[in-house]
Each structure stands twice: as structure tokens, then as C-alpha cells.
Image 1 (cartoon, helix red, strand yellow):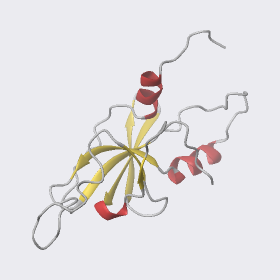
Image 2 (spheres, helix red, strand yellow):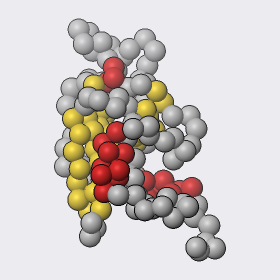
Image 3 (tube, helix red, strand yellow):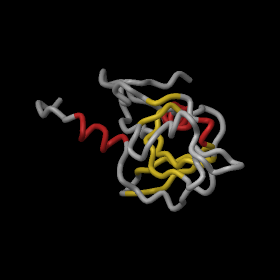
Image 4 (cartoon, rainbow, N blue to C red):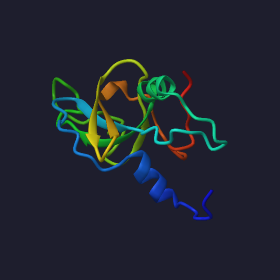
Length: 139
């Protein structure tokens, strides 16, 4: 175990590495990067099997906004902004639906993969106001 204290910024960078998603949202859609799973073992040293890591990866509901389509958060008939305004901005952390959206992964590095999702603007569940790394997935 290392005595090096990892900063919150470094932890967030590890969970949400800068990777080109290879797509941009159209219309009223939002592109988010899902939180990476990262470790192959728990903090107590329990090794997580591949199936557990895969299940947790695709059940993930915490994401960072990467891009917002040009029609997002606008009335579809008039293109006026929603009365309550935009629900999120690029760089915000969100809770997104466990099921739905279009999800894919992009390889980077030797064996790593970044996870992305495009969803409709009205499907955003919540804006994360606390630590996005503290939220856990329940499978």
C-alpha cells in the first residue's frame, strides 16, 4: 500500500479519462461519459472477477457531460429554451438511467476502455451535487 495521497482531481481523471468518444450528439441529445470501474480489486484486497466488473460497468449510472446537442433543453416546436433552463452543462456530473440510451466503449491505453452514452435531454435523472466517486452501483 502506498503512502501517496491521491488528489480528488486525480481520482476523477482516473474515473473519467479524456478520451475521444468518436460521436457527437444530434438534436435534443446529451453525450456523457460513464464512470470507469477502474480497480480489479477492492480496497480490502478482494479480487473482482471479470463478470462482476462487466456487470458493474454496464449498470453504472454516474456520468460526466461531454457534449450537448443543439436542440437539448429547448421546446421542440418553438426552439425557445425550457422555462427552467438547461438541466446540465458540459462538465457536470449526472445520474443517468440504468437502462436506455445508446452505450458504447472506446479503447485507450493497453487494456483500458472508456464508456460513453447518448441519451435524450428529458431522460436525465439528477445532477450530482456531492462526490460522483462516492456513488456506488447496485447490481
